[in-house]
Amino acid sequence: MTPTNNAWSKSSWKEFTALQQPLWPEQTEVDRVLADLSQLPPLVFAGEIRALKSLLAKAVRGDAFLLQGGDCSEDFSKITAPKIRETLKVLLQMAIILTYAGGKPVIKVGRIAGQFAKPRSSNTETVNGIEIPSYRGDMVNRPEPIEAARIPNPKYMMKGYNMAASTLNLLRAFTKGGFATLQRVHSWNQEFVIQSPMGRSYERLAKQIEQAIKFMETIGIPTDNPQITQTELFTSHEALLLEYEEALTRVDSTSNGWYDCSAHMLWIGERTRQVDGAHVEFLRGVLNPIGVKIGPTYDLDDVKRLIDVLNPDNEAGRITLITRLGMKKIDKVLPPLLRGMKKEGFNIVWSCDPMHANTYTAESGHKTRNFNDILSEITCFFETHWSEGTIPGGVHFEMTGENVTECTGGARNIIDEELHHNYLTTCDPRLNAEQSLEVAFQIADMIRS
Ligand code: PEP
Ligand code: CO
Image (cartoon, rainbow, N blue to C red):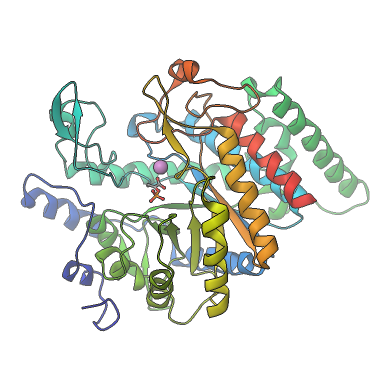
């Protein structure tokens, strides 16, 4: 059976092979949690999902730019007001930098409020000679490297829902309640960044924006409108845990369509995007914008089939292809992909994830990524699109507002030996606030020229 010749329902994915699912110790509790989840209110509203899709349709044409970013894996113990605020601040700063340089709206999508489930390359890992189950994200088990912490617990799905709801509640308050007003553009700069070269570049930009607003006020253009005083941040996560996603999938009473109301945008990972797999079957039936990760070993016909299944009407804004090819391979493997998709006439938002194929293990044993590698993948992404006549529509980062030392390089040139100073991620290494600003300024230079 392939996912096109059967009738879709929110549970039809169960007829297909679902990779990367937790091995729950027993089913009764899982079923109880899922039944409870399916009665709880949706986290997002279908109208918001449609609004995001029409913004993404603009990014297909090059009239908007997608900025997607946040934790690799959100950590329940870090869901506090200051941490949510700091991540939001950096996303707002990056968006301002890119809007100012690119002269087009930036669509802000967080890897936030639900990024709690992780695919892993192996079911187990060996810690101090003992084999224990792999950590699969806070919605499944705990990261501590001991057997007891790694036993999947279905109650964590309920906790994930509640954590997503409280994160989203605060994000909505910050984005609509005055915190994100352009009049406060200076205040998004963070204490520990202000004195750095990136912080100073940001201050200069903030000053220009402040002057522009003052000028508008002087000549009598009102600045107390939502375009100035509010912003919009959409949520996204990898749709990995299909039981959870199914429980949050609802019919929209205004349009009668099915929406996965766990987040505005969902993506399918590199490891679960089999055309005849359960993840593709599930996502083909919900109307959310869908991201698809594409790694360097993709098969062109396979990608075409995937798009046909997920977007049979070629609706613009439905599909974002997030290429994560690696700085060593991108110049060879991106051009044939772009040509192949262009030939089919597919409407695609092309986004660059310069993180996932540039990971290496430092001598200290820390999983890391180097700032220059990240930058070279981004540079090659833009240049390839320009030379192929396709549109570089967005970027996708693992990043945080915290002052972590997880990726090497950047203006402060973090070296391998310094990674242990503040290495906090439970999964992949993230850009810190300063490195995130730096990458935004670098992209700004590219899109301005
Ligand atoms: C991720 O985005 O955290 C991830 C696991 O990515 P990928 O599926 O591209 O490896
Ligand atoms: Co990751």
